[in-house]
Image (cartoon, rainbow, N blue to C red; front, side, top):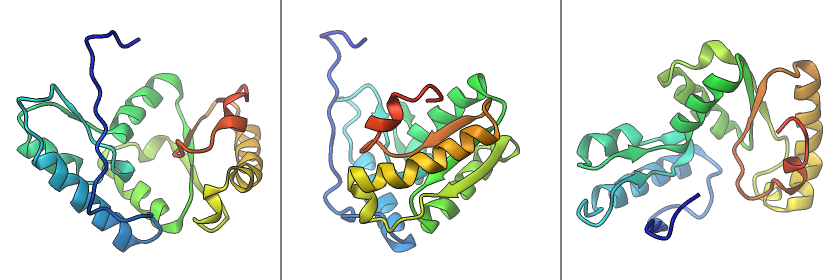
Length: 169
């Protein structure tokens, strides 16, 4: 639990893309997020949680920041290491799949990866919770049935209402 003395500030990246559908969008996101992080005044913050797809640009920001910098992907992989020997991942787009593969190589996590599944619907459709659930639930059920002891990594903060109630998440 976060006490009253903890203040969390969230900043949108003004020069970032409106969606992450292709390699160019992802590169623009990485560059824009890194610029904002590099301009962060270290006297105003104790740490930076750098939320860029698969932690792209995290190392660059760590090199120039005088305060700790954390990335959701590196944190998640550390947690996965403690809860499951193997894991599978569901991603939205082919561009995300190639980025994830590169990120897993950088984090030396490929050996524990079972597989990467694509969501199977266009990125814009994945923003509709009903369409997302209709596409995601069968993929998650199939992965869980193949190996019930694996962890499943789903990168989607937007739509997890149906998935949160499932026993395997």
